[in-house]
Length: 205
Image (spheres, rainbow, N blue to C red):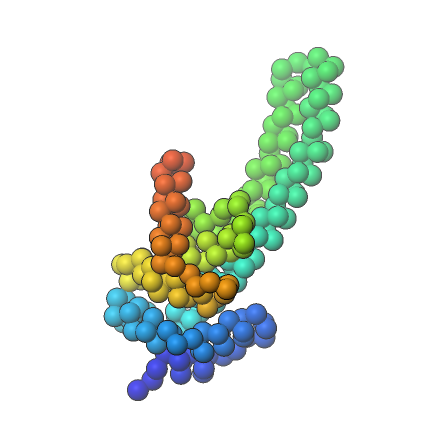
């Protein structure tokens, strides 16, 4: 009988050293088969080992890239602010008409909206992005929420315990991930989204 670890072992290894290390940690982890057993029982034939492996790899890649993408977008935003600020101040100081000032403000607003629209951050599922990054929490939170949404869609369950194990493997740290940490990521996300008017989960492509 084919085991999940055998599927992992036979999975075509990408060139990325980070992904290779991730797959090796997953292969070496004693909890790997138990996680797949739970997921397989919940998802049934709707989910194959290969699909889970591929999604976890992509989720980790997106999560790991998030802090750098947030920082880059912040730099772009600051540049636009510094570029337009003197023009806005000058327009106010020279007593330009409201229409002229509005045009200058609209130019600045257009560029700010464009940065947000074309930013790679726009490819993340709603509610994943957090500006706080204590002890690498941005990436961990993103991975946890991406996997939670995936399991909810494919298994009709949040699978918090399984997400915690996969988080340990994908983004390891000294202490093991507590299941409550995974729940806290999700419940805080839900509260934030309700406050901001709701959200619609997106699939990870």
